[in-house]
Every structure is written in structure tokens, then in C-alpha cells.
Length: 154
Image 1 (cartoon, rainbow, N blue to C red):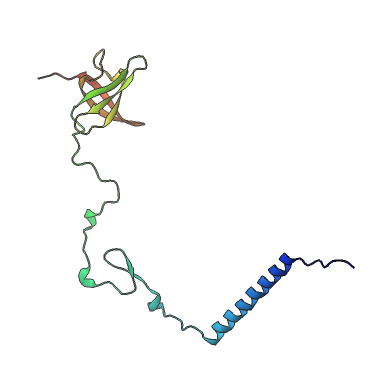
Image 2 (image 1 turned 30 degrees about the horizontal axis):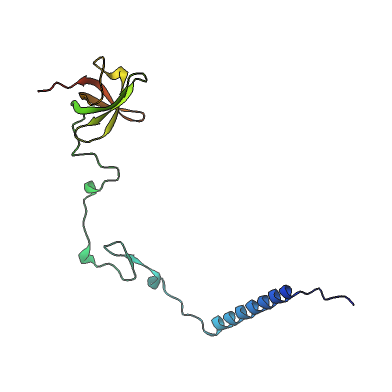
């Protein structure tokens, strides 16, 4: 006589499958016996209150805020408190490498680091910690200093 092909794990899996099938049939019978009342469209609607939270009650018209179309900014706002882009700026040379021909200037007002190339120097040489005046031009990788001169100390 040969041994049965059913192993313990096969029997357990079959029992679990039968149990799930039985539970599913019971849930189906429960749903048929006690049907839920359907919600109307108005009951399913959700509203956004003045704080941006979802709520089932409609918003209060008294709390409605009015906005002018001109006051809505879709893009990045322009810098108002920054320095004038047209005039010369002042700054201090943070780093300059003569062999490679470039360096960086730290702006006195904004403390931004601005790239400077040796071709944009109006003087022959600048050193680290020199005070300079310059104008800013936007390059492909960010702001570049042009027309760089040593600042005249008053």
C-alpha cells in the first residue's frame, strides 16, 4: 500500500480556503438580508471650509473672502528689497585663482556668492579680501560679476 499524497500543509491550506469561502458566503448573505440604504448625491458631497479642510456642511457665505484678480501671483514674486540691479554693487573677493582665471565675490548687502572670470576684470589683478565694485549679469549657471574694479576707499 502506498502512502496518501495529501500532506499536512495541503490539508491546512484546503481548510483555510474552505473557511474563507464560507465567510465570504456569510458576508454576501448578510448584505442581502440587511441592505444599506443608499446615500443621495447631496449626502456624498464634501465642501472645503475657509481653512482648506473638508467638511460635509456647506461653507458660511458670511465668512467668504473677496480677492482682487491683480493680487493673485502665479509666478515667483520679484525681489523688492534686493539691491538695484542697474547700478554697481560692492563686495569682497572671497577666492580668486589666477592659474584657472576665476573666483568668487561675496556681495556686501545680500551676502550672495557671485562668480567672476578673469576676462571680466577691469584691473590687472585682484586678491582675496579686496573690496571691489562690479555689475551683475545672469549667465547660464547663475549670476556673473562683470566690469570688476577695485573699490576706492573714501
